[in-house]
Amino acid sequence: MRSMVNVPKTARAGDIIEIKTMIAHPMETGYRTGVNGTTIPRNIITRFVCLYNDEEVFSAELFPAIAANPLIAFTTVAVQSGSLTFAWTDDSGTTHKASAEIVVE
Amino acid sequence: MDIETAGDRKTVLRLALGRRALLSGVVGVATLSMVRPAMARPSLDAAIALFAGGREVQPGRVHFDIPPLVENGNAVGVTIAVDSPMTEADHVKRIALFNEKNPQADMAIFHLGPRAGRAAVSARVRLATSQTVVALAEMSDGSVWSSRANVVVTLAACIEDLL
Image (tube, each protein chain N blue to C red):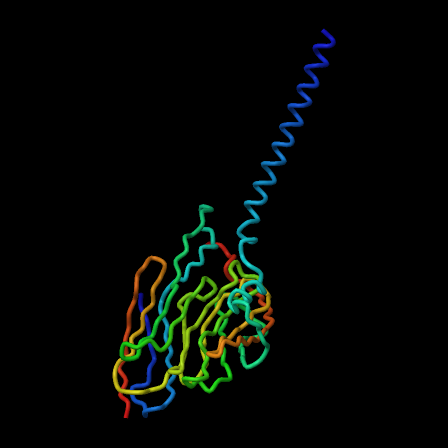
């Protein structure tokens, strides 16, 4: 899985920063049938978590109604310099992780 | 001889009836099992009630941005913003999206806190057909607010088969 996260490199303490995340994932709903008439098994990302210096600031539970290559945009307050880590977990139990550094002045 | 034939006929008739009853039963079960996936999903109101957990759902405070006319239901951009100071004492805890006619009522549940700064979330969803979509916000004081939107979809998602 490939992911993309957009976090500002620098921010002033107390600033509200916007975070955009996207991950390449089919988000197969489990409601579709393939060429031979069998149901294509479900494979979706069910959970997304964002940690700011190891503290959870945002998370999401996702269902088949989320489009392929899930894009999630949200905000957080820049409190101190450090790292933001992102984790996506899908039905197969695979967790994909990404991180970004932020400098807070 | 005649009596025996009549008896046989009755048996045949009974058998036929039995078979018919059995057949209708089989058809009934088959129909039920075919309908089940659609019936298994709770209605929009039931899904909302489950999320609210018995609390009253009030309209307002939620700004739900979703296009009223969608060409492609496979990826519909949505933004949900909630009127909230997002402080430790008063903030949005959860933002949820529910639909009326997709195979599943739930779409997404976002967990926020005072560290979000602003209660605003964007994502892309799938819509199987033209329907009502509801955005809900659960506040730290326990109140639940909602906003409804009707969306017309010209190309549906979820139901198309692989080519």
